Amino acid sequence: MRAELEKLIGAAAVDERAVRDLWPLSVMEVRDGKAPPRVLVARPSGREQLTAVLRWAAAQGMAVTPMGGGSGVCGALAPAAGELVLDMGAFDRVLEIDETNLTCRCEAGVNGYALEQQLDARGLTLGHYPSSLPGTTIGGLIATRSSGQESSRYGSIEDMVLGLAVVLPDGTFAAPRPGPRSAAGPALHQLLIGAEGALGVVIGAVLRVHRQPETTVGRGYVFGNLASGLECMRAIMQAGIRPLVMRLYDAEDSAFSGYDVAGDECLLVIATAGLDGVARAEGAAVKRFAGEARDLGEEPWQRWRRHRFDLSAERLKTFLQPAGAYLDTIEVAAYWTVLPQLHERIKTAIAVGGLALCHFSHAYEQGCCAYFTFGGSGDTEVDARAAYGRAWEGAMSTALELGATISHHHGVGQARARWVADEMGGWMRVWRAVQEGIDPDRLMNPRAVGGAR
Ligand SMILES: Cc1cc2nc3c(=O)[nH]c(=O)nc-3n(C[C@H](O)[C@H](O)[C@H](O)COP(=O)(O)OP(=O)(O)OC[C@H]3O[C@@H](n4cnc5c(N)ncnc54)[C@H](O)[C@@H]3O)c2cc1C
Image (cartoon, rainbow, N blue to C red; front, side):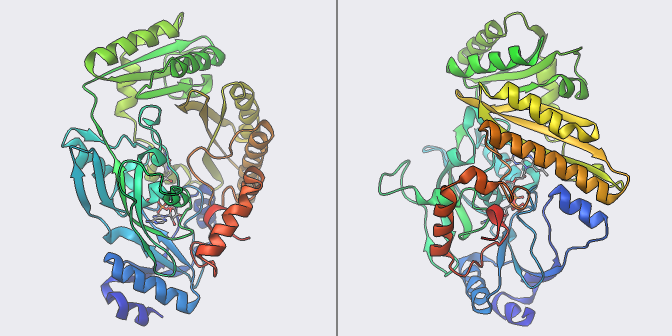
């Protein structure tokens, strides 16, 4: 097999190794001695080679999983023995930054942080800042339906993608649709945003970019309790303000993050941005909406900014190193009216191990994402996995019961496989039909969006 692949794309572009993303359960299993299998990894250069590899894999009946930065946290990237991984690292060119039309054309393997740096150098931004940005690729960010720290202003990845260049499992090439918007049929490229490598391989994207704001005004406010902080966020969004960053930490998360709070107090870190006068006027409006909240000045914002990428993959792995340790995050989203109850019940469900934190970010006029962090340690690896599983079970069943989505931006993979059909309902039939039509042999990532039929 390896020799055949080497003939197609050259020996230097073929490797054999274990491949896993950063799903904490995988990391825990590896720690417990369950080493993942070594699989063939192909790193094609260019569309022709990639198409040849896909056709070759199809002829072998071999499952193929595209790989970006490997920073996914849901186990979508977890090939089994005998499968093939498609390393997109050679698709690493930024092809065009159009400063007049504010678009950027790049390949799917481009690193998210590197792209942002290139845009920054021209006074532009994609505005997509997941905490993992330095470890991501554009293809992975698209395939997981990701969302970043500045989503309240710039939107999530689906708002940034104008078009996609895709190779389907049978080798069909589909190019980005033209122009800033199109009504020539449905926006079918959207099917691949969040498809986790099922349906096909994203090889490039046309992205909407923005001019950097002239001024940013950031502050921290301390609210007496979570409810008043959430009400402030809702009022800000519904007044039409689109903060660059808006994050409300619950009492435990505020204290854990080392802010000056006591009892039920919750910290809101918020920044407005735009033309100088607009950013300042919106900052003043935010202060009015914050009402009685204690104004901590700029320091919380400056501090958050300095540490925005601190939770790196390495740090996550360090937390998970000691035997029996578990740590994970669960991001759900709901309407404003549901959030207080959702927060209370999920906090109770995940508190099994001691650490249970939550912050609210990615706000909309209609609601917000609630991002939980939980952790603890078991006496044995089996105990740790059981406690970890109970926390997930509690969080997912609560979300479904209260009408929240089970994932705001991490995706499904294997982590949410048990619950995805409960959320999708009849749409699961549509998803399966699309899969059946495009990939009848189900060769593209068997662990995408909940995996097996
Ligand atoms: C510390 C930490 C913080 C994080 N913070 C955030 C956050 O703030 N917001 C957020 O949204 N996510 C966050 N994540 C999750 C993760 O970074 C995202 O899911 C990211 O989008 C994955 O990109 P990647 O390139 O690493 O993809 P990978 O992990 O390599 O792959 C993810 C999925 O995409 C598929 N895929 C990859 N490339 C392609 C392609 N070219 N074509 C088709 N399918 C493809 C893979 O098959 C897989 O199913 C965080 C992760 C960590 C570890």
